[in-house]
Amino acid sequence: MDLLTELRSRPLIFDGAMGTQLIAAGYRPVESPESWNVSNPEVVAAIHRAYLEAGADIIETNSFGGSRSKLTAYHEAERVVELNGAGARLAMAVRDEVAPDKLVAGDIGPSGRMMPPLGDATADELRDVFAEQSEALVAAGVDLIAMTTFFDLAEAKAAVLGARAMAGSLPVLISLAFKPSPRGYRTMMGVTPAQAAATLLEAGADVVGANCEITGQDMPGLVAEFRAATEAPLVIQPNAGQPSLVDGHTTYGETPESFASFMPAIVAAGANIVGGCCGTTPAYIAALVAALRG
Image 1: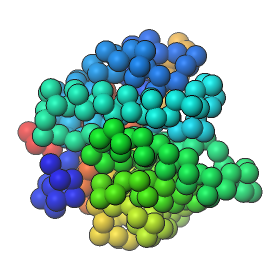
Image 2 (image 1 turned 90 degrees about the vertical axis):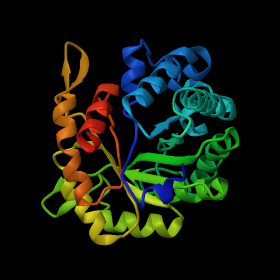
Image 3 (image 1 turned 180 degrees about the vertical axis):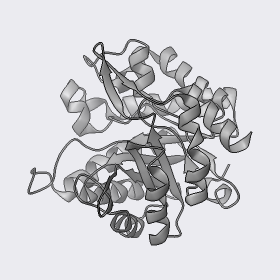
Image 4 (image 1 turned 30 degrees about the horizontal axis):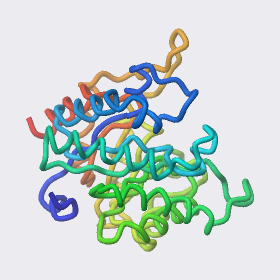
């Protein structure tokens, strides 16, 4: 499947949360989630398999925090190539077994560092961090790079530049986390959808959009703001409702059916790829598939 060609004819479906599933399987933050690609590959493989069997067109590698800067917190900075490569090969093996016509996205999240005036990271440093992780994922054979949950437009631009340098002809997707405000949708750094689209597409992204922070109910308005600013493909991955703490555990308020009920409006507003973020499971993706495809 060629992603950008396919998007001209129909919307595609991403998988749901990886972290939610790892925590349910017993993961605790004494080691990086990415280390489970090596220490508990059967758990990660089962998550990928469940999302493919639910109907996802694209699954994301277990590599959201797989950059050198994020792995440093777990004393695993020198395992970038090992852990990202293992995650990519694991996802591709499951894909080849279950649904060979589907795609594997190399997932990349923020670096965890801030640029001035809030931090001391430079654009060049961050570009190199994202290039290193992208190179490891591309070398292992992913079909595209998907970068998610960015807030700072300067960091997001560095991420796109780093990924684009290593991705070759592979598609590069990037999404930011927005919230509604009286003046429209903004990231916590004050970035608008129009600013994000213009900057990131110019930097080399093929697909832009939003994930996390807000639910499907708020997403159609956000998609409309993006669509007013660009004709480029849009990716949208809302949460399974807003999080709340119950008996020490984070829970999300929406059922799979209520989550999926917002998806036709999100697609009608202009989204080309839809999926789930925090709190979503294979049941949510199965409901999404049913809502869009019957």
